[in-house]
Length: 501
Image (cartoon, rainbow, N blue to C red; front, side, top):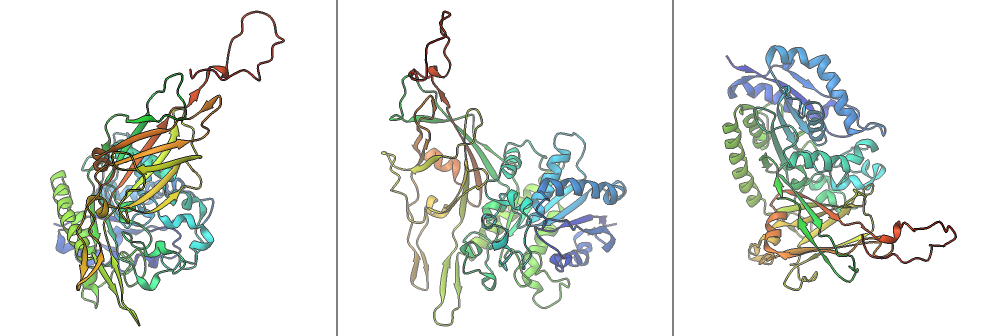
């Protein structure tokens, strides 16, 4: 007898209609039996949550799901076993937050066995910084619906809530990966539906993304690195640079299955990874949905750690093949054709704090390379975007071209060179100059000299690395002095700062 599988669908942000799920729920019901399990219509639950109200934040949605689970799903889980969640876009972070919030460290088995995320905004979206009124005009995502600010704050690159959830995951302090926790899968596209491209915002056509979410921002394979500034001597000055050092070993998250699906964008009825899926596998155009549907069915079949590892291997091989096949895109134009080279990307979220935990908002972050730590020797196209978080100015996200960093041959199409050869990056370093640089309490410049090791540590294809930089908060003796005696007439507003204590 086929295994019965409960399935919950969870949509993305600012959705107002259940038609966002397209034909995927019906398609899975139709194909499940041939793949060893049973899904009937009554086993499928279509989630609907409110994200277009400003007062609703992502943790509120996670809390509300818990109550919906207790009311509607818990009796069925008790009868048929754990449920699988299939999410789109912001639905992925919602379910991750729910699992982390209600089941992290509880010991009891999480009632969700599989989390299959389609184009999840796990590290946010570069579009989120545009603001609600501008976003509502983008055809790629909102279809004229003005999004809610509460969830928008979570989705802005480098948000505090996203950092906390993802850094716990990277340190393996969240829900375990595997049969003792939750099997997690990410399926995402890197194709742009040019019909939905917004000429006023290039993020909707950004390389390495589906027009809304970057592959690096969806992928849950991530690293966490902490760099701490060495302690200065009492006579240190701002003319010196004080070394940044690794605070413990860099850590990498549990391995997570990632599948880059060919020809899929974030949204839309023609290319959208969710909405474009046809309900009938025999209908015209349904063959384009095959990689998405097969990927979901592969995920649902996983029951053991060994099967999960094999699926990760399979997804890795398919991802390599897709990214190689989609390396060059030619868009047919009326007068001329347009050519696009799609290299793999890396993303780094830098968070700068001092040792007291205070947010540093006034600082320069400078990347360097070479024996003389030169900031001007990086290869062309090395970094393609940066965003500073508006609510946490101590956090800034950089988007890098991994293939340029790793080294790659020239890209030639029909005899025309579209991108020159890159010899790669031999080493990488950074400098942080924070202000104030003088006074009774101040900061001193920090530096990590360029090394080959740092290249390998920070840059991985299709991945995000979180780097926390901790600077020394230098307090001088003059902040507090004890004066012997009983004479209370002495002024001290002109006293020198004295040495660092």
